[in-house]
Image (cartoon, rainbow, N blue to C red; front, side):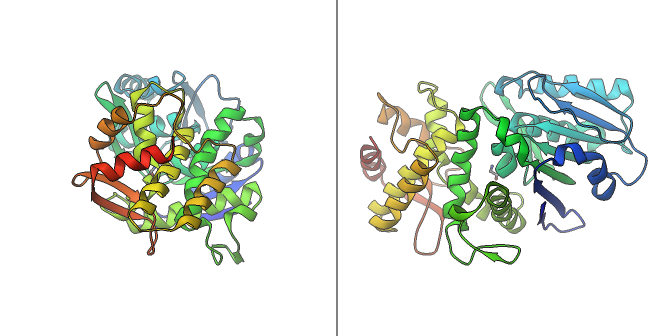
Length: 349
Ligand code: GLY
């Protein structure tokens, strides 16, 4: 088992434990890290998640519907009413068992109910293990857009059970690999990057160490900018085009698959702005393709439609804004000229 700490002020630091079989050890880890007294646990999960946990204290399981469409205020209301009817109190905890939808919903319900209960995540997908369960972003969608209502609510403990990854459907795994590919460019490809005492690149790591290294990179970014007033935006590397591909809803690509295309696009854009050279663009293509992900726009993609969505990106500062690689690493770059944005789309057709 590998332990990575997310270092935060005011006693809110927490461990992320990575390794095979951790879900079945929940009770011991809860006792050690999150629930020292005799509280109860509200376990939030979905029917389709093939993981049953035993928190080792009195608990009740609350299931939410499957899929992104479960991320609604109605789901939060339903959960909080169920919590209230059971009599959940501040002496108790919420445990989310699942992928990103569960960690977002369980986290937000925990943040809101009684103005905040501790939450622990048992992340069952690669996407949740390297991204959604870490860093305290919780929330739900509105008809007007994704993740428009939510809270920063850090978990007390995260378990990333890597044995569960063996049973993930191939496409679900690929979606997580799109986020893993992102970390190659946020420090994961630097020799000298460390897990504990290991100095090694993400490419060379076995799955447990690879997940742990991604968590370590994310932890460092979250610690520097918990509420995304600046640096945390680098975690959206590849996401501006990725979100546009998803938002148009016309192409059958899921989040991680769309992010993979967005990473290669961001590299092309950075090259045309003179920020990186040919080798670094080739490195982006190599990493994305090494994970079995596509590095070009979906067939029939409409560049003007994608540009219209990217122009409305909620993280935009002024003009077209992208997170781009460069000599001093990945950073946010605003005011990019429309013709440059369009030409880079042509480069990934
Ligand atoms: N998923 C991006 C973040 O946690 O900031």
